[in-house]
Length: 322
Image (cartoon, rainbow, N blue to C red; front, top):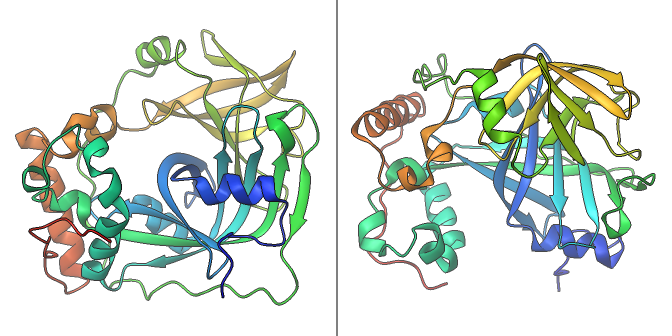
């Protein structure tokens, strides 16, 4: 009988945080080595000892980055007072069968559809094929760091993957270049910074000494003329607070810039802000996008399906019960 815990040789507090997570921070590396962090739905796989994250085929950039460079980082934050868990992992992208991925994602999402749809019926939302068409990214941990009780000022405890740990390969990349990304709106970074600074403290992503993009939430953030001043926990996982990084405010604003050590933490000099994905900025557009957003999503979906020589997935008329 397989274990119900994703990592049976880890302490219970760590396995519980990871096993319960339906959302995590997921960091990938761009071709220029910039770490970008995005909150994504995640599915711990107890049978394989892996954690999978998923993104839409109509917004596939994260999966493309993970296929090009499989070094990824994840952060799982449990209940207040529980462990905070950071994972260095190697990723495998699975997108060879979009119909199978859609079926799987719908089964996983079924218990939460009422919450995700803000009370809309399955009949009303099943047509959101841009959302149900999915890519899965399977992440095999090679090292796990955790801070018991969530005290990230202390040095983390560590777990190393045992020798001989195997990592599944990504599906072969589809032929041809990726479909062009829509020209999503780009906010003025200074105006957006003034808006998000009052939100919960953001997540900082930097590349560690092993070439992995690791993520940790900072304790506090303060707006400056050139970006932000960050109060970074003393137990952070990076060898030094320097280099190019990103700062993510839960998807409401993701800034790219230069990190330098400073008094009581670090400074973050903003170089640019990433475009806004309308589905993230306004969650109502997940199932009821504006005409322009819908057009852009469907064009991107059609382009990615054509590369894979696949049809638009069939979305079941009835929501699966198991």
